[in-house]
Amino acid sequence: MTNEELTTDGRTESDESTYDSASDANADPDGEPLVEQSISVEGSDERSTPTNPETVIESRGLDVFYGETQALQDVSMEIPEKQVTAMIGPSGCGKSTFLRCINRMNDLIDIARVEGELLFEGKNVYDPDVDPVALRRRIGMVFQHPNPFPKSIYDNVAYGLRLRGHTEDLDQVVEDSLKKAALWDEVKDQLQKSALDLSGGQQQRLCIARAIAVDPAVLLMDEPASALDPIATSKIEDLIEELAEEYTVVIVTHNMQQAARISDKTAVFLTGGELVEFDDTESIFENPANQRVEDYITGKFG
Ligand SMILES: Nc1ncnc2c1ncn2[C@@H]1O[C@H](COP(=O)(O)OP(=O)(O)OP(=O)(O)O)[C@@H](O)[C@H]1O
Ligand SMILES: [Mg+2]
Image (cartoon, rainbow, N blue to C red):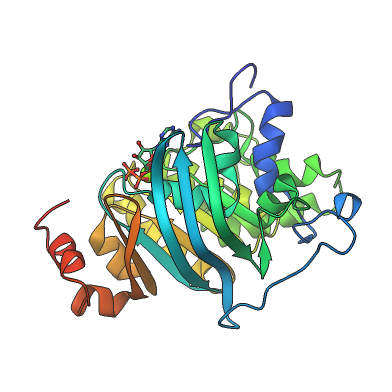
């Protein structure tokens, strides 16, 4: 792992020092607050009361620009805790952009600019006293293409904990995380094998195990199954439903059936970066309020 740059789609990893700033996303065993004590600005740790007590993430009037181009327009949404929220919509409508706002991965894009509010547990993640590295420990991310490190299965899962100086009970955390990611039975006898020798579906579950090893509150997944075959996809779908018992899951997908199958809430973005409808998944797919949403989900465009 040398001399590669971290990218916001997670396709490549950096050398370890650079990668730390993103894998830290998956790296806090203690469930620390998103504001590190050491950098907390006195009196500035103000939190807004979420409109709904079960809301864990809330965007309020969120606009995102890449240079002159606006990618998201006035997006307001409340994402409930310990449920699966799906984001759907045509290519380029801003789904990945929204996901990357939540754990400030857009910070890694020089020309990206965010306006409005994005609250996590009532705290605006764009407040100046928020440490994005600490934030990403609480809000892990899984990408379209599995990106395990060229290390053993064990070392991949233990990575975030070791980064934080933990040396005890690693075996137990590795086992628990692999179990939660529904991978343990397949790899328990070969933990020292290279992660790169696993199948694509196994690698993706390993990346999920790596993300949950540090005990985040939220898992962001950007098309996590779109590079996988139907059987591997089905395993990931089952896994996501199980994960939502413990974590808040936000998933971007192009697969409408997948969104309908596994999500509790669905957000429909349409071209121009507008959130057109956000509701219970059943309502979106069975009785959408918006004609453009109906046209989109019935395949009339997009
Ligand atoms: N790094 C970037 N630099 C400049 N413009 C960008 C960048 N990333 C995204 N955009 C632009 O922002 C808009 C939204 O892109 P985004 O990747 O969020 O869409 P998406 O809904 O995830 O699309 P897809 O379904 O194809 O993944 C697009 O117009 C895209 O061209
Ligand atoms: Mg995308």
